[in-house]
Length: 346
Image (cartoon, rainbow, N blue to C red; front, side):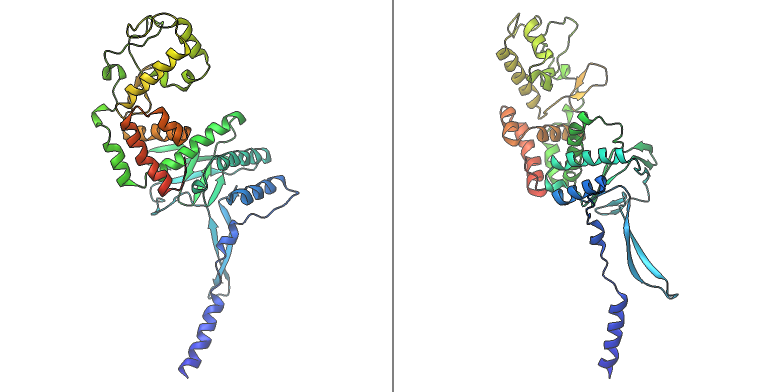
């Protein structure tokens, strides 16, 4: 008799407990007659990432309440949701949703550029494109161009972005996503930070290498900083041609007069060695106009490493810094996180 009573009860319980079906809300269907919907479908098929213009994805029936009314769960893209919980108690967001078809299509093109130039390990569960977004916290109001969370990735303020700027902007966002994910590995980052003497941060390069003189034609340049690390010097550019044309009139340790391409390349390699000896891969913007400093802190040092690592494939990076063992050691720590933990091959 007990078994006979329990069976109907179980069947009744099964009947009022629906399947959530939340995963179905993230499937993008095609509509060839709607260019925006069709583009969303193409991105979903190609990259497996659903792209939305609204934070409310849809609703799913949960149960009937005691009054016989339907109870629904509304699935939303919550920017406060993080891996460890929610930060909604301290931070909130104000969002303007897209309604202009032209901006929506432009934003989808940007989303495609981001996904095309990112590895699958960096793909979000869902992407949200908004017209404007502000973060409100105790620190004030801040415009947010990108927010990366445990499941969601949001892009905003795309309207003011030029088409030719999109690849570079997408690359910077990809680097930011990598940085956010890398910061989850505290032990590895502690090892990375400990490789560099903390006394070397936030120093003028002229103080680090007081005997160095910039071999350049300008008499107004009386301090050294690793200017040849700028990418323009490594290409056929006006900067490079100026160096060759005017050559060296300041530094007795380098050939005087007009320089060849080989001389410029040698000087670039030399400067890279001076920077790399301290475990750095680039300079930081100084406190005064025209000045260059060592990275101000470990966070900026990490930023500069990730930019350099994402800019050059592994083989090229190792070739660029093969004369700087400390840089290679720091690189390998980050590379192990990015490759082994995140599944991103550089």
